[in-house]
Amino acid sequence: MTDTLADSRTSSRMFTDGVPLVVEDVTRRPAAERAGILADPGFGRHFTDHMFVARYEVGRGWYDARLTRYAPLQLDPGAAALHYAQSIFEGLKAYAQPDGTVATFRPEANAARFVRSAERLAMPPVPEQAFLAGVDALVDADRDWVPTGPDQTLYLRPYQLAVESFLGVRPAHEYLFLIIASPAGAYFPRGVQPVSVYVSEDYVRAAPGGTGDVKCAGNYAASLLPQQQASALGCDQVVYLDAVEKKYIEELGGMNLFFVLGSGADAELVTPELSGTLLPGITRDSLITLARDMGHRVTERKVTLDEWRSGVTDGVITETFACGTAAVITPLGEAKARTGDFLVGAGVPGTLTMALRESLLDIQHGRVADTHGWLHRIA
Ligand SMILES: *Cc1c(COP(=O)(O)O)cnc(C)c1O
Image (cartoon, rainbow, N blue to C red; front, side):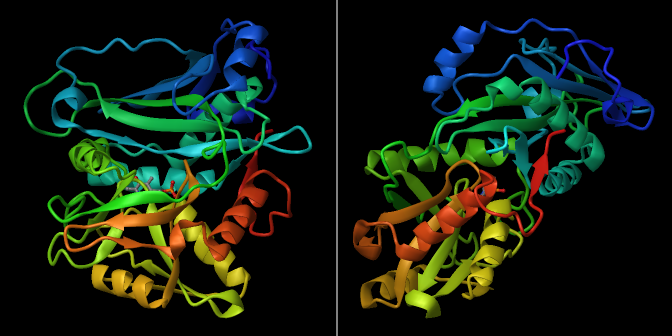
């Protein structure tokens, strides 16, 4: 990476047709300061030296795409996103590879999902190639911020928000597309521990026809109160049920769920089907493929709370885990519900849960061959 504009890779410097991706000369924080942060990055607390910003205006399209110094935004107090939540986001990671390069994991899938989220919120989509160009440019500029410790990563947060100052209710005419990056430590620094969950029978995450299948900011705002309820009961996460019958298990506030039926080579995996109210996780999709590679049957279907509880009690369901980009795979331990508490898998991480976790982490960190072509190397 060079900080100057004298970079010869002009083809990688386009954001969209006719819109160059300008790399500004920015100041870096001292190496010692960066090393101090990378020694214990935590999650989402520290940000890198750069950010990526592009603008959109109706009638003009995308313009002014630049990699610039990480700095506060100036927003008009009337900016639409602040009032009506016309705001979407993505989450993906960059991984230091054993050969010294850096790779992201299935970024095309994030780019495609970002388009679907934009369309649902009546926002102009960021073209997939432009999304990828922005991510590559930021990771390239902040390569030194990709931590190399065990299970450490650089978390990338692309997002898009309506910035037109207008209080009428209609799709805004002006938008920002931004990408910021934050070094992330190992999710389980002291070894993988099962999380406890609270099954919310009062609140729902998503209703048919709503926005549950896209990554919009508003979904998360609505999940904070049930999360507080769960915390008050000593639980780490919330399990949501379907909005109509309050019977079927959907997902956690930000992670998809898998159930393991049986054990050993014959174990079968079941995951709630994408009914339109679930977020189609890229980790979920990857694990379906990996489990099938390992010879396991994987079924996408409806699972009721009753099936889960009785399955755990009578031994049919041996393991339950949640998955998502941030935590990769998290085993579930204790489950609390108004209709009765139960314990999954004796409260210790399951065998298949841990095998799938290792398998995915090995691919992401470049420790095994990437046979599905999931890694995207940053040139
Ligand atoms: C982002 C997200 C997930 C996980 O998706 P990944 O692509 O695997 O990170 C699951 N559920 C919800 C509600 C999410 O927002």
